[in-house]
Image (cartoon, rainbow, N blue to C red; front, side):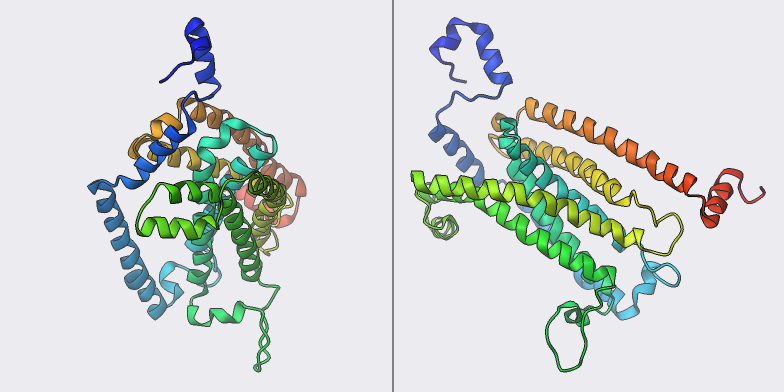
Length: 349
């Protein structure tokens, strides 16, 4: 690593600069390192990509096709249990997607500069997590060919979406969050696409030229871009909280005992952040270990910062976890008291 003359005269200053993640390398050299990792693809990547493609095709045509032909009953969804693995996957993937927005937008608002090397991975995880969550809704429909009934459009049959259905709440919330997070992901990508455009050839150069939207790096373009990213950073945070609160309402408005709790909204949000930040750390570990030159950009200091953030979120989650039981205990309705007593004493008691 290149060290400045001032750092050479003071050896302890070099360690301090590395700890604060200041980088002495020229920007052009770092851009070349990034492009080298993008243009270098080993056979291991294609093996993993091929295996995952086969898994997706088998699950899509064999498993999902069998479920459509035989009905949702094969998954264990039958009266009175209408929710099962699908709703668990929906909550999981929406929760995973929240960390990208939280890590990127919140740290951008607070101007935490250590976020820069891993915000892109977090934002991508948000977009793909939401896409997977949206797919789960169609899986849960059963008669997926009638999914267009959920879209609020004028029709001659007098059929309109039932906005009392939690499926409609999820549909609207996920689509709103997906649109906002995709735009929030794409805006910071514009300068990177311009950099890749100037360092690529052939079809890659044409693709990056389209995605860069003519960005040339002028002062006016940077000013407008920073203003847009600042607006989206502030705007997407309440969208993030509202989306998982709506998912929590799926359970809270149900007539099932113990689910109708007022703590579910913040409890689900904190749980989503906890699982999502853990997923960000796992993604960063995979990227750092498999992509060339990424160890230079993703350093132990980043994992240390994520670990501290994860510790704070886990303490908040522990509070809401026990608070959920406290509310049910002091609520005192008959069914809840019976279930709690049954849990403590067992069938014999």
